Image 1: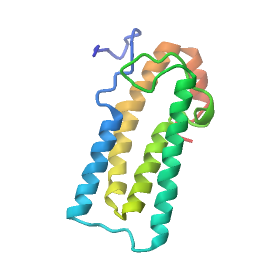
Image 2: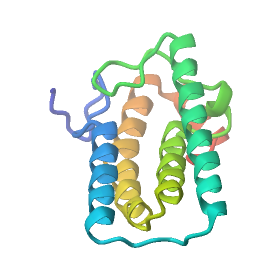
Image 3: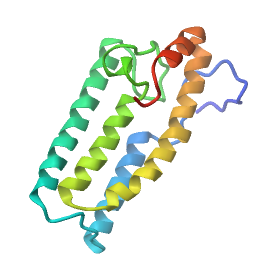
Image 4: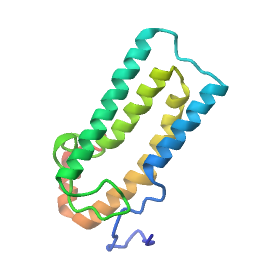
Length: 161
């Protein structure tokens, strides 16, 4: 991976250190193991399980839609490869990071589904990693690569919603 300084205008990709899905998966698996050995149940109400299914399903559907937008735009969600387009359609017309919102929904839904607070407790760690370890680097890369086009998009579309 190429090392870039803050003033480097020749970034070939976002300088993200760790693969975001791996970080999310690690936090999810750790939370599930913690729940097995140190249960922190939310409640015994069936409605929480139903809510979990709905929220988890919504997160999965949103993530699939986001990946379809990437495919249609002929670009990649993988930070190791160059971005070829700024996504401005579908969920990306309302949020610059809907794929990460989908991951948060999946964490919350899975937490309700398996009835544990551990996944909810992991969300702040995931947020900090994504916000500062991924999104900040992606934004720097996109601004350097696309310049005014990205600045216009960023001023019209919020980071989250």
